[in-house]
Length: 265
Image (tube, rainbow, N blue to C red; front, side):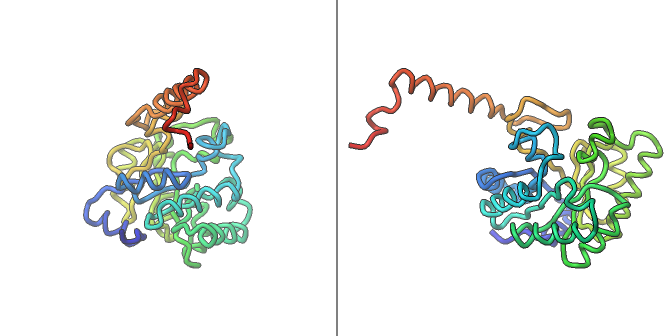
């Protein structure tokens, strides 16, 4: 398979093809995504909640993200892989942000970085893209600001909020971002933003009119109890896995496993 690049994604959007993005956190998930035709992957800081046992994304470190992104890259060499910049990896200073973003690409082989925030981060995005670091923006609901916002809430329902979302999207585009994630904004607003941009919008909880969609892989597969409104479970894999593990435990306890075919003579 030919390597997927920023140009590949732009051509797909120009051809009215919806972009399909999923999170992936390890080599196995990356291989499964590729085999399903999902070659646009986000190694999200949501790994803190899906794999590391945290209650939100804030404790996730650069070291966590570097390890998981490198694993995804090994599992899917041809995919377009986006490294999610974790909390305080870019907010402290532009210098630290440039160093961390550069390390993300050089160390893991990721194709781009993603950072949360709108117009206030446009100067940083311009620096990054000017230095050769592809940047995906992220506006609307910002999980890294959950403690400031008082929870996970839809953004842009009032006139001022909607205006800010649009201004943020345009500022990121002007700064050189190649795409913008719209998280939990009203569908009509997401449609308007998508119509006004020439770069793709990737929706999560933002309706049907974005250029593409991204979902958390554990939500799609039913691996966690929590089920957000914007997600669709395509399989209850958690129940299947739990059932298989219980059968294994029961067979070991009863002496059924290992059987003769599982032993060496």
